[in-house]
Amino acid sequence: MDESILVVDDNADNRDLTQILLECEGFEVRMAENAAQALSLLETFRPKLILMDVQLPEMDGLALTRRLRRDPSLRGVIIVALSAYAMEADKRNARAAGCDGYITKPINTRTFVGTVRRYMDLPRTDESTHPADSPLQ
Image (cartoon, rainbow, N blue to C red):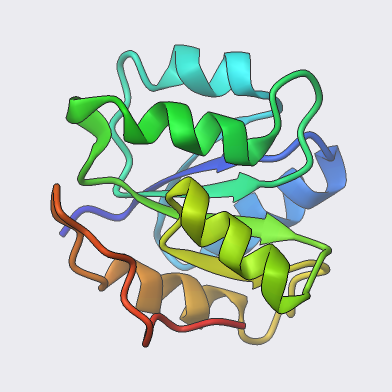
């Protein structure tokens, strides 16, 4: 089973915590602190899931998600937004950009890995419609 994840977050503390939690559970984790680093990594690394911070410098996470969704080679990748914003409109904007789900920050360290596992189990096809019953935290 593919257990690879790309975490895109400009906050070093968030990256460190996320990496520790996920690697302790056996996930292969790569990190990027901005869109340019993420794009560079994605030239050679195809994760099953991307955890995408919405508030990134230069190119925000939703703009990066829209760009990734236009790339046919990345259509099977599950993208989950990470954001401190928790309003329904924020979740709708993330879905409209192409995210399969939404996790609010700060992350809950007790439930985070389980939530990520549920997203990893989502079917993702070229025609994905971001199912309404996706697990949301």
